Image: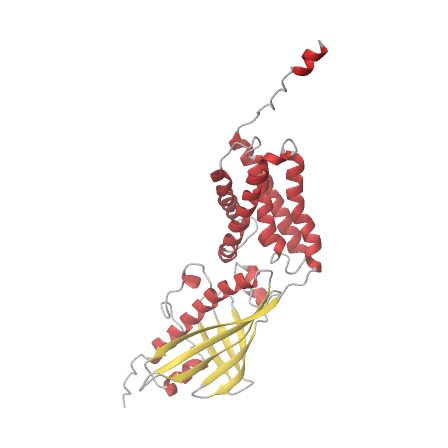
Length: 340
């Protein structure tokens, strides 16, 4: 009898399948969002640049996607498409929470989205490949995945981040002489609605447009006062002054606390991003034509400097494009005849 029992063991009862898949996924997403908010608040409260970190930008989305994908497919039956779509579902949930709950602005969300999608895809694919190996150790797998960002939070502050500087330049041809353009480089005090040109950064993402700028004094040491609305006001201390040729300044962003700007993590004078200097130059471009060039220099210290540089090129480039359009419009405007 014992031999027969050894050769024909009783079949192992299958793991009972309880709960619907949508309910499991919804519960996992809710838990993942609660975990993400906890990490967000912890990083924001304990470190000046905690949210601009490898943990938050890259590791957290991978861990959350891996966790939700695993919980939503406990029997390893779902297709690869299910795993590859998971980052998009999580991104949608993140957007729904980040604006009303965390008060994040559109620009932060737009910048984070590509990183979170790529990182989430990596986490989902890793889970897809490993799901059969976890076996009945699903709880341990999920706990290990969620522990990774918490461990990284403790280690990352000990690793110095690389810093870098970058310059964004734009130019435009103006049908006017340097003598006519020079007063406009000093400042245009009365920018009206509709002046300038359309830009993605300002017309879609909502970065403020300039309302006006004026000089206090002349020459090196003078101050250029800029007003961009929504209490966005700053100073530009003149460090280069060559009338008819160039003007340059050092940015002074004191008073940032009063700015009515929703993207608080994108201020131009933070621990990880500083807009430092800028200026205009003029070059001959033919009879009655002048090339006006604007440069903006900035410093950054993030775990993704190359990625950040792409956004700096877009955002600052759009702002420069609009400023140059303002100058061109004013310089090429017909001069009203003088009535004696």
